[in-house]
Structure formats: C-alpha cells, structure tokens
Image (cartoon, rainbow, N blue to C red; front, side):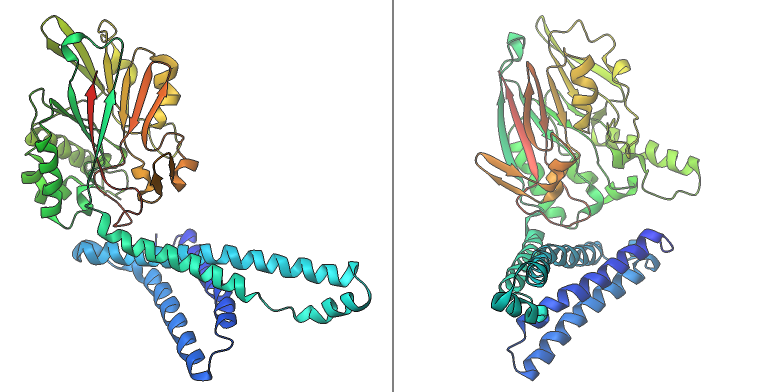
Length: 416
C-alpha cells in the first residue's frame, strides 16, 4: 500500500484540493484585519498539512498495537476533512463556471458600456456568497461526521410485521430477530454492545438469525466479545451465515494455510457461541404437522469486487417440498441476480452488508444514502410479487466509527 500509485494520487488530490479551497478562504477573509487573516491562514494550513502528513505516514504505522479508538478516529477525521472540502469545492466550482461564462460573454457577445465593464472585469472576483455557501456546506458535513461518533451504539429496534399467504398456521406469530454486520473488530465499548444484546433478549424472540460479517478481518477480534454474544438464545435457536469480511480476504496472509486456519477458527467461534452456522445448506423447523425451511448460503455477491462463495443450488436442494422458505444471504445484490430469477419459492430473504453506508437521511416517507447508487436494495423492506427482501442496516460499524442518519439496527419480524 505504501508504494501504491493510488496512495500518491490520493495525496496529490488532497494537495490540489487544499490549494483550491484556500482561494475561497482568502475571499472570506478579505475584509479581515491583517492579524486575523494571518490566524485564519495559519489554522487552515496547519490542519491541511497535518492531514496530509498523517496520510503519508499511515502506511508505515502498525495500528494493531495502538488504541482502536485512536486509529478509527484518525481515519474518520482525515476522511471528514477530505470530503468536506470536496463538498465545498462543488460550490466553488459552480462560481468559477459562472465567472468564466460571464467573462466570455463580456469578451465576445456584449458591446459598448456593458461589454467594457465586463472586459474590465477580466478581474472578476470570486463570489463571496458562493464561498460562504461552500464553506457552510463543507463545514456542515464535517460537523455531522464528528457528531456521528456518538451514534455508533444507538441501537434502533425496527419492528416489521410480515404477512404471507402460504405461511403454515402453526408459524403464524413467529417472532424473528435479525442481526447483521457485527464487525466486532471495530468495537471499543463492551458495555454499550452488551446493552444492544440485552435489548434483543427483552424481545423474547422465537428465532435469532445473523446474516454475516461477525468480524472485520480475523477471528481473534471476537476474543473480548464471546461473553457478550453467547447470551443470544431463542427457543428455535440462533442461526448464522458468513459475510465477505469473515473470510479474511482483506488480510495479507503469509500462506494460504494461515488464511484457512483463520476461517476454521471463526467457524469454531460460531459453534462456541451456540450459533448454528449454515454453509450452503438448509434446516427444517417443525410445529405439529407444519414445516418451514431456513436456508443459509455463504457470501454471494453480484458485484465483481466480491467473490462468490455461496452455492444456493446446493443449499436449496431438497427444500422445494416445504411450503415456506427463509433465506439468509449476506449481500442484497443476490436477490435480483439469482434469488428472484431462479428461486421464486423463496418467500423471504434476509441480508445486510451495506450498513446504509452509515450515512444518509431517513425520515417518514423518504430515505437517501450514497450507497443507493451502488445497491438498488440497500436498507429496509423490498417486495416483488409474493417475495420479500429485508436489508438490515447493521449492528456494528467499520471504517468510519459513527453513524449519521442511518442508525445501527436490530430487526424484529413478526410473521403472519
């Protein structure tokens, strides 16, 4: 990574962005006293240079020996500064385009007094209005990201009633809790995590389903949280499947054997927690003479950058005889790409993966997140014909240690 061309391109972009944004800073500070200008410029460049220096040394630091709070906060602050400047620059660019158009109009299309004014205006100054709007927009984004640090453990219970015509009578009223994307390697507050588990157990669910990404990278990340997640229990059991982060694909392992050993250890952790890990297979629940099937597949994504470990054909084999089926599949892109096309008898698919990007807006009747430009189904309930997909917003977090607008989720379904 330290010699990656992408790394140097990113650093170069930050330098150019700093120079561009500084032009707006100068406009805003134009009427200030020389002493105030000096302070403003010094603060701006101190923050900008420090961000770039930290970015330059990051590849040489071994953060696994440092506090996870420091690590995640450093990443979040640098990313926040960068994206705040990008947002601000959009407004600055709009004003630059306005000035260019105005200059061209004055140079080639106007005449007499108006043209002379515009030609003299070859010194057209940057609009103070756009500079302020850009700064407020960028500052607002950065402020919201900082505020979002406090939301990462604000677990939200989502109660979702689901009606199915073909659900066997004995299973009417079945209460299912879905968890997804725990990402234990990101946690720094064990008490807060435990509070979320206690919220689940207060619901007295009949069945608990976990749809992948127990860790960020390695099985060892669960060491401090075994006595938290082993408290999950339900009469019909706790069932789980794997997500893209569970395979150790984002670690530079020295050997393939080392990577495989990590995966086997993670599988053992599911068992030690008392969870039944479904690896491209299905199990059957019985109540009296009624039966339903629960199918679990390994990670399968329609997105090219994620490998396809799942085998739904294998998992589904033998399940066709049951009148109602639930599928656990980590990545929601699986639904359109394979489930709806070839398995119309799967009534409900539960997924996660997107986290709602941990950033967005959700108000009654409206929701938005940048992740929707990558995933068609990225949060909440989706229905096509008689089939339903629910995308959980995630219990944990990764990368950015916070949540803005999209809170961590515990989903409670009641089947009817």
